Length: 85
Image 1 (cartoon, rainbow, N blue to C red):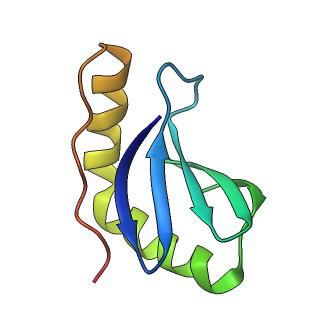
Image 2 (tube, one colour):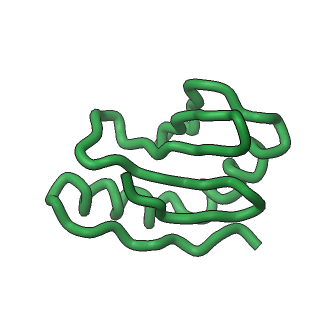
């Protein structure tokens, strides 16, 4: 597991190795979810407010997330992604 961003108590991670489709994991308090990078489809549970923030962050950083997925597939270290401000 590699933490790639953290904002407002929300922790974004990617796991080595992980399955397709490209996605990231979100933790917020007792909530856990998986978010598909391309579609934004969520699996798991997340508070509505936290999920809104995650989707704003996703919209800003899709290209960086795709690049991190490529890096993960190649066994390269992941880049940290700027938090939502």
